[in-house]
Length: 64
Image (cartoon, rainbow, N blue to C red; front, top):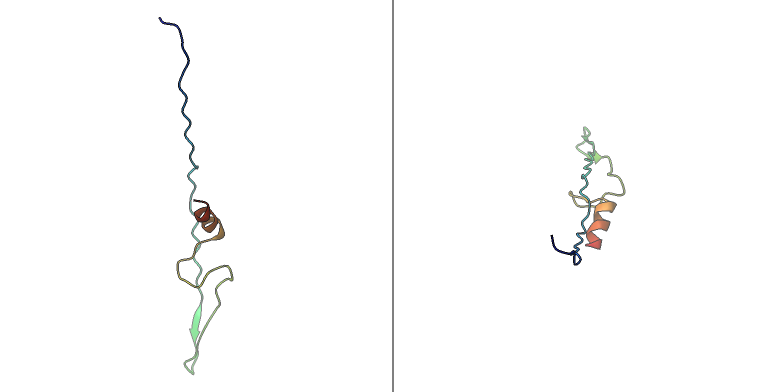
């Protein structure tokens, strides 16, 4: 066996995989006898577009 003359080192950095939590919000809509449709408002933290991204996912996207 030969003499040891050192070693090589490599580091790999990665982020841990996590699960995505999906919460569906449904706004109940009703039509009265006069034809007017009323709807329950969505929670304030949800943006106006149908597919919304929560604050954690938005923050992660900004870091990358």
